[in-house]
Image 1 (cartoon, one colour):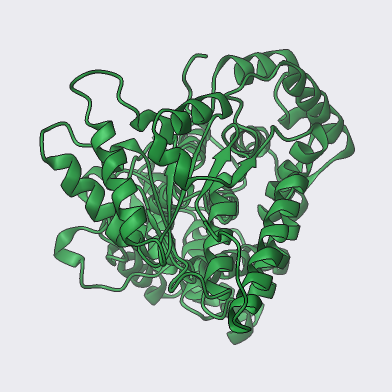
Image 2: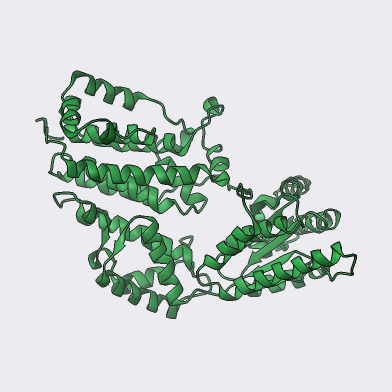
Length: 498
């Protein structure tokens, strides 16, 4: 068990600056997350039904996760009064910061140190630890909720939040300037749970058009995408064509076929879902769709295992997409594989609704090129309704490195030159040996998460803790080249053998 002597190290100005920087990073991330409708829709599926009327924000969920970190650490102490003062101060400081207050602006350094010695301090700690900031469903009680939700919806803020929680765990563990073996194991456990959440939530399917969105904003976002030059050109050409067609209609002139349904062909992790969202927004701003939202689904979302249920299931999904775009991933899996398969029923329902709602409903089907060609050719109705094809290719080594560096920047890390050289060697070899199921951007995200976990294990025993230490990724943090390449090539992005 943890030692029984209290540690009352002074709260220094340098220590405050580290906490302030981490707190500001978390607050900005929460603000961005709260504006994401996909996040709010997904969170609703994780709330305990008894608390479903509460409007939880990202700050509440993050506080719940931070308390879980603190309580895990506190569990190492026989006597809770012996928990290091710095560890308790971290909890109080971040509690106030995530609720909109900055203690460093309210009190000077002398006053903040005095607060930690007051009788009220431990009572406040007890109150924070007992506050129910967020009540998840039973199956998620032992998880870090915010990272799990963010990873499920592929949020750009996952890296920021996961690194924040890991850094705070490190600061709490090192609050007494020493790390025991049990603390080191605890930190590794926390880092693994935060960076590799195992939870499987119901798919977040509904993606609304952002508030204040415009055609110019969408096209600017399109141009910022990495490694999709031909796709960007094709989408912009389509946008220009539809704009002119709209002008011709307004002038009473004849127009060409404006079929908006599309086939996206390419490997995973190449931006197909992202581009589909943008298409919906473009169609809305050009007046072709009423809402422009995107509903994502796959075979599991449309096909049931019993007679009569597929029609109900498919129709429900399709109705939710009217006025916007229905994005069906791995659509080729709908094609019947056996006599008892109900996939063809889903296809027939889809084709009928595409006809019934042809003026306000767009379908984008996606998957591997060969399989998608066979899928479209398998049904005359599919061939007649899909005449726009977008080919997504594997990213180049340069694009993969840019994507990785984007995760680094968003996670508030920096990459040393030696680390980048080693990483580049991994990417060169992976690109050369890649298979059709190579995860591209998803693989870069998984590799980044593995690297920041290695960094946490490397720096856990180093003192003192500095901002540079927390954010720097060194050559030592990049895993061994040959082993890493083999792991990436052997497994696809879902962890299945190829």
